[in-house]
Image (cartoon, rainbow, N blue to C red):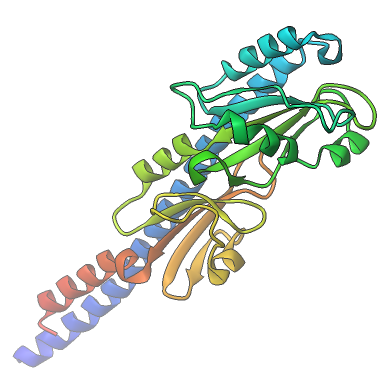
Length: 273
């Protein structure tokens, strides 16, 4: 009589376990997707706020008509627009041999070596290409590169003239605030990363990941929402306003499914299975 009573209860327990596991797994996937989306939105807001502030201020001047002292004053104004601006310079393709006026390296901003950073600013963005295909006020975000101190930076070019070979304001944006936000939002065992259009890690909650290539299985899963890649469960979301950039959340399945295993163990113990 005892066995006849226990067996049906065990069957019900396994059925409830199956239903509960699916519901719990769905909730975990929704939470992972929500983290990716919220971090992507916050990252876009931080970077685009700085870019828009630079572009708006750069548009206030007729840079080609300014004296060297006035150019320096204008660059100081741009530099002060955001604490994530590492350095900013004025680049005129018509005078490729002239020194690049640059402002940077002050406290409360990302590190920037003025001596080496000036020529890096000249090479940061494909300025001739941009000037052929755009007009005054056009903004281009180039591929991330290693700036002063081997810290990843995001180059931004703002066209401030018309026609081919027009002058540009070029700035480097430090990514430390983005990385700090990723660290705050990363749950135990999870890794949050900002990935550019070339599949490189631009900022990460894990140390030592700056500008390394994202693992192929993770890169292939970008843009597919929530899914699996090898032994990882991942979610990704595009960064608003930065074409090709995504935030990727990756969690080992052993960590992500721990609540499911705990639920299974509880049901099995309760049914005596």
